[in-house]
Length: 454
Image (cartoon, rainbow, N blue to C red; front, side, top):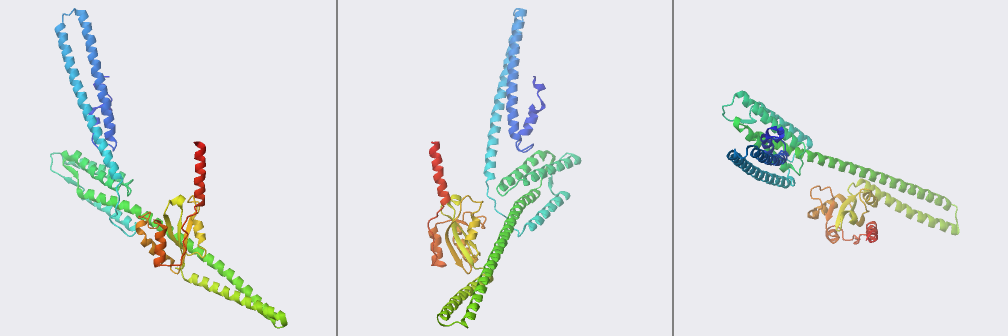
């Protein structure tokens, strides 16, 4: 195959177009580098084949002419050698360029990876997702106004016809908008800085291509796109925050419903016991009217015993009614789960349940592989307040410092106990050792399996 018969995608102009970063696609430089190496190899084989053909031709002529055209053949050989030498120099130069391009691609990849792990810091802090949505809508309207008012691009004086310049403007804006739409469709808080850098780079490349026509993307149009970019990120984060808040509200409502049902059930039980004791007391009093001697003494003792039970029942009823009225009364619990959370990680939460262990049982459901161990259960007339104070005290030890609804803290149990005893309740009993029965049994079974394998 001669050089002129190479497929179009091996032509140098097409390879050069690919190698320019961002002109075709993000992976264009990589594809261009591969095609360039293949083209170099093909060129080398082509010229080696030509040299070989010349030698064969020389030998044929030499045999046919009996060395009559020896000087001519020498000149042809010399020319072929010079051509071969030029080709080798060209191949060497292209190989060096290929190495340089590969190095640039690697550097850009490294820079991209560094940007990808950037930490996103919110700029706007708008109150709701609806406000973000309206703000994004306003930004897009501003962008349309910039385009309509011919302010999205900069015009420099050139000799190109107005029609050509107009076409270049449209192509530049279309290319930049498509690049922006593509990047914004996949932007997250983790890669926002990298996307910002790519949009700026895209503008630079488009401006460079359109420079001969005196056309470039206006900086204020770029800034408008970047503002939309960061609004999009915060909009997505705000939606997730609102979903989390709604889930928390629904969970709190379910918890309140359970507390309400639990209180109602206990009230009915207490009322039933109270009715039973009052009926028993009335029956004893009826018997007392006709009783004498030892029988009378026995009935009086029963009445006294029944009165004690009635007073106890009334006290229980008043306590439950007080709990029902006081929406802040409840228990703050300190629990751990070594198998799921690791050593010295504690969850500090609260529940209004009359039986707080029911809440702990729910937390030890199928979402975690092992059950929670309870280290302390603290009753408080203001359980949410106590929980908030403990969270504030250990805020620097939070496991998740972003989502404050996660109540896990990397702290020693001794520090928690000291804080509670010194500032809140000095009569609480703490269970220092976590049983973690299933977790420890699992470790033993794993050791046995490893022994069998070894």
